[in-house]
Image (cartoon, rainbow, N blue to C red; front, side, top):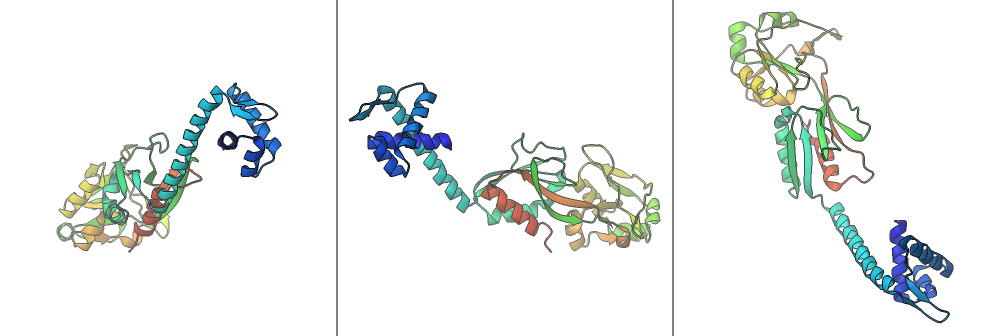
Length: 295
């Protein structure tokens, strides 16, 4: 901004024809204006004005430089005006990374799109650990803790996994009443794509973690196949609530062992640390926080 300010002083001097007149326009002292021009000439390595006791005029180099300065100033003012308009109405492309299970967040995302039609979403679904800044994402939705100090974060909500099965499966195989009953059932597991490990079922008794060596009937690296199989009576599975809400509402699935489950996860939205949060990111963060876990 010091450089832009000096260029502005140079333009005023060139247009006013003297240090004194330019100083009056700018509300500065004549000596301050003169020193600014001298510093500018030193930095540019060229004499910008012919000076005498009675007059001053631009040199050839000064005339060329004046045209460039006016163009720079005009482009800067245009950019300021454009940014000011963008502050009023959120618009433009918003690049967001979501976990593979993020497909199940589409009702909330589509509602956001309807609310802010001038924002164009570029959605990337992956369970890998993305570099938000290096890969150019505006925001990232993930579960778990935040470890990157370059990122701001906001908690969207906590969720407790649900153990579910189809009514037909339970009618044929019996309904588990305590966690140990799961050892006799077909269990459908989610595998983390990054680590290859099976996601543990957050079982608990009397506030203490309960670890069981559950049967592994089927494994999938995304949630949709587990939902599909559970709804068709292939076994019992443990999934986040947003993944099974539709099946529960349509009575394709029923909840099990609700008194033996602990809090399992936290959804967060992350975005690059920036003093000036862009309107499109700000409204996306606010909307997801307000609506993702709304009843």
